Length: 266
Image (cartoon, rainbow, N blue to C red; front, side, top):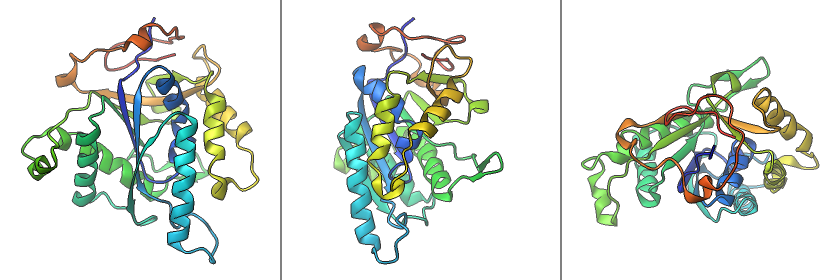
């Protein structure tokens, strides 16, 4: 059974390296199968280098260069930096409008973002407030704002008209997921992309951790490595095609039932 592959994908996150830790395997696969992808970074991670001798401007330049290099590893060359304040991100109306502008400009079929409700996982991790803010702003921008022609109508002066995205892929902890993307052939690209963030990794090799996480996510899904999502499909966009020609030619291991709204993809 062919795996769904969108034609145009936008990923909205808070910081450089968020994509590489979360969904870069999916992106590598979709790019290989013909998708066009745009990354939108709400901040440039300018407080993310813990060296008091580096200014925020210097840190932002370093981290943007790392993110651009990481995107290129998986075949993405369209990276937008909104340069909101790192560590202080809020899901304001101004940020929503900025994201609506990017959505209407790129016109994605699929938007990937984080889970705005994820506060912690287990007893060892609290989700960064910027992650939650970026996810909230992204969700509020994609629905209903980007598709409402009389909201932010002034964007028409930039040639940007309303656009309805077909699906939202929310990065999910495994227990909340309904869709698993098989990244077995792309996990090494995900790791190589993550390695570009030298200011964050230092001398640490992420290989073991990434493969452990992706292996645990894939457990019981007839695949070696996977990334997990909860997928929302908007009913008024249901008539859009489910697969591209590239997807139809791709064999994937599929676990569970497949519907327009919910599937376990290989």
